[in-house]
Amino acid sequence: MEFTEWMGIEWQHAPENTARLTLKLREEHMSRANRVHGGVLFTLLDTALGTAVVKSLERGRGCATLELKINYFRPIQEGTVRAEGRLMNRSRRTAYAEGEVVNAEGKVLAKASGTFFITDTMIQSERERL
Image 1 (cartoon, one colour):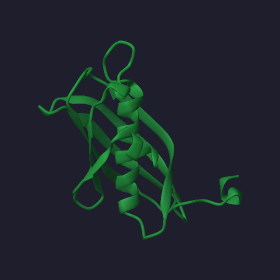
Image 2 (tube, helix red, strand yellow):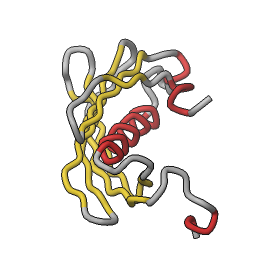
Image 3 (cartoon, helix red, strand yellow):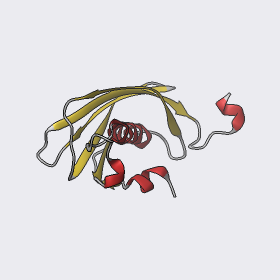
Image 4 (tube, one colour):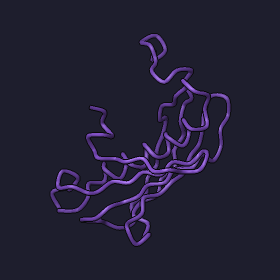
């Protein structure tokens, strides 16, 4: 089972170079403080931004996160959240994307920006990873 599937992430229709994901929150997503763990929101944003980058590439190519910066604005304890990622800039070997996670009322929970390395294939050989 893929990690995003285990998390419960669902892909929604989105325009070109954009990704939209939703997640119905579960008990497993909560921290000890009974609110969504920051890593869950981080995962949503990393996935949304990376998907926006991959959608801009030729079939078979991929990307890897080089850097991701996130700001958290408010906690959430239940419901469904939506993440959106947008490709902002792409060069031959890197891409920059931005996005946010919102609650059901559209209030921003977190924002992120990230830089991604563009790979020739979706899955890299051991040699390419060195």
